[in-house]
Image (cartoon, rainbow, N blue to C red; front, side, top):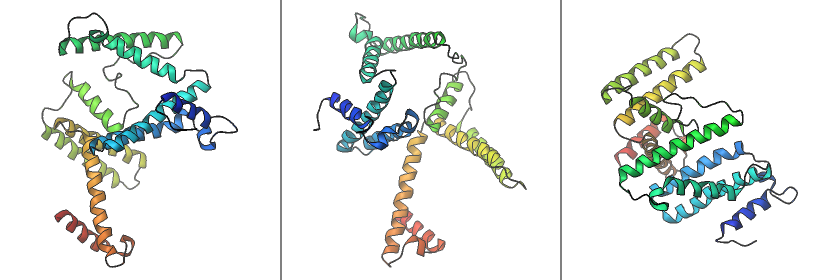
Length: 273
């Protein structure tokens, strides 16, 4: 089989990988649940390539992400749910439906009118989806203000969305310094939990979640993206630790051979550089 610019070629490759007997053993044993983490990872790698302004890498990462879509569609086709064509048809129909100012006769094309139409059409789609699920006997979705914030997104992103949604009705701090005070309060609580005679991992996890939620709230009040901020710190940590490894290698050693004092000294050196 040769490479191709036709997406149907990719669909055929996935079908071959999932064919019992002649396919790939690893691909054959996968399910929606086992592939989902890879789908999320590939989406992050797309974002990383964009952040690096690496268009060659972006091309490759978009291919990896497309493969995830094809993989899920193939597994769905195998159980008679839908296929890749259904996915394409659904998204093209949605884009046409949500852009009447482009694909229909609506003359009004101001940003405000487009946003109003988008919100109205999404609401109609949500109602239709709820009706369809009800017809299938599924439990109806909650009608609370925060129920519309999906549970499948990354935890930091969801925290920001939940906080912002609650803020629309006034349930919010007045300024960033109030959030900082809350962070200190949450830190005190986790410290108290650590100091208990019989520390509870579950209670510590709960308190740690409160700390992270408060820190995320601070990022929102500062109009910063906590995911981006943490990615930057992750890279900074990697870069500084690489400096430690490089300096130790000059003496024929590795971090495992060094003392914590030596590594901290080289860490400070990396910061100064």
